[in-house]
Image 1 (cartoon, one colour):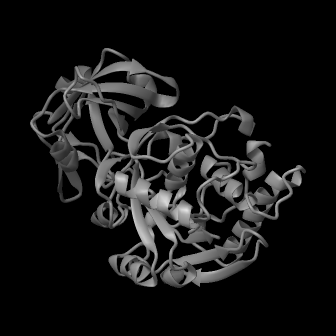
Image 2 (image 1 turned 30 degrees about the horizontal axis):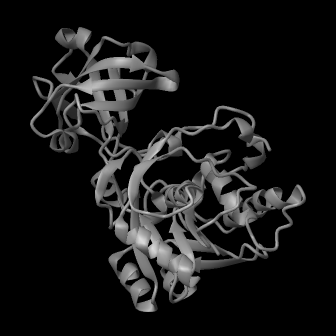
Length: 397
């Protein structure tokens, strides 16, 4: 199967640039995987669409303000006291996206990171990057006279990947919160070029139940939940459990090969707590349906299913789920609409094709999911659903 088989045309005006005015008011396209039947609904209908006894599993990872802007150490003495007017395309500024903290006994917490940088050609091992605190003064930005963070480039990789070692500071997370920006995807554009994110983004590009800091992108299926909807699910008799997968390169790096057989994802860290492991084992033993909120949750569930037993632990997964995969744990998926030719779209197609009435002895089995999902996306486009991170969602049952 080819990556190009998962292409589709999306009108640009359907790419959501902002979240809905109120969290939880998104539309939701409901799919019956057995028949492919589609129903237009609202996200607030979710409690009525799930059954008492269902186990809903959520990813509680919290998005870091992981987008930073730096100057190269060699040019620090020549830098002006005023920052450029447009930090998204600055002259001399380097954009740094923190994608994963590297744990190690010889480095203090917060010091060693895998990153994506651009323009990458300017950032080479041995160089030093300087990160200043900026503030807004009218139409211009001013910055602190001294850098608040410095980092040495230790290693370089393909497609802008770098390893940075930050000099020790009293509280790295607090400094990051002060100078960092929410890592919005590139298809979300802000009219004020001086602001890569807004106060709205810092609240809404985060789930209401986020708890464990570490993600470089939001687990977007969870953005729809409100405390009231979570409470209504519990009243309905739906059990809710949490796991953690820190979203990094494995989720959002673009596909650069032509065949699905050649796709290899970066590993991402996850944690499965005891309460969730117990809930999963109990649901499986009692025959209750397990619903995954998001593709990140799905990847963790399928990774631990392949291990043969479910127990509390932490680890990493690079699992890639494509049509033809037989899902072992979950019976439902809540997910947003994904980019063409993305591994997330392939995962959703895999789940759509994994039904009891699919003939696995024919080539039509795996391809049925691709066809079904592309038909659902065509319906969503016709009905003017909003797409991607801040957009509407799908529920596959």
